[in-house]
Length: 149
View 1 (cartoon, helix red, strand yellow):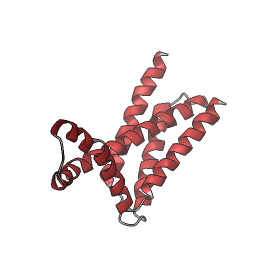
View 2: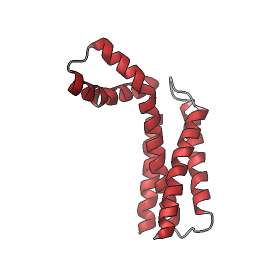
View 3: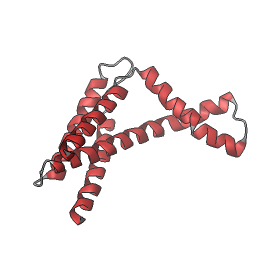
View 4: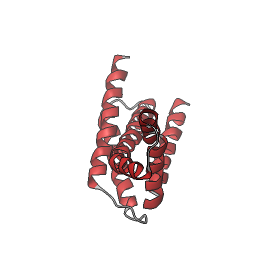
């Protein structure tokens, strides 16, 4: 039963990643900008007071790339955890971390290839690297943790 739950969660999470990757560039940018507006700009307003439109644009421009990359890292970190525990629940022991990492790298590559076909998006080699790094970090952390249990 545990294996089924982890499998459903992993496939569901892959679907979430696919959904976000399938958004047109303008929709994706608006989502990032909206997040920045609701968090960073609000925090800035608490300490400084009113933020003018020009200041908002500067803040959004400054934080847009780091926020997008942090989102990549977070999403693929979670994917790494899910893939690792999915394979683990099915009894895979030999090469579990390596196989988990391979699945995440292949998914990251397929995700960036998929974005080549989405309006205004592009497949980025460095996003594959970041996504692979994020999932690898998660898998390494959780494989070490699960060996201690």
